[in-house]
Image 1 (cartoon, rainbow, N blue to C red):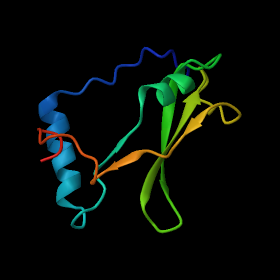
Image 2: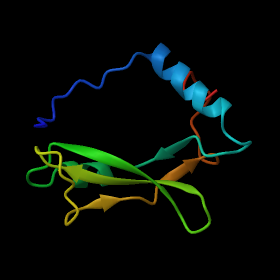
Image 3: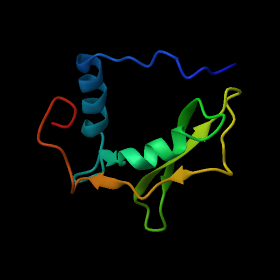
Length: 104
């Protein structure tokens, strides 16, 4: 498959609200429901030569806390592993948005 960076990933707020609620309803109390990444971390990945998108890997740290690892992806769908990667997200909870359709 060839990736262009123009793939359609649209989801309505209603659909997003339903599937995030499904996730929250299956989480243990105070489980991590979201991760925040700053704009610069994302742009550092996306602005790499040959990068047309991003892949996000699920991960666990050494104390079994969920993490995400972000990596750029080229047009062939290959990870740009020798480039910029991101983790060290800021988890929710404890740093969450005000209540909205995606988190409550």
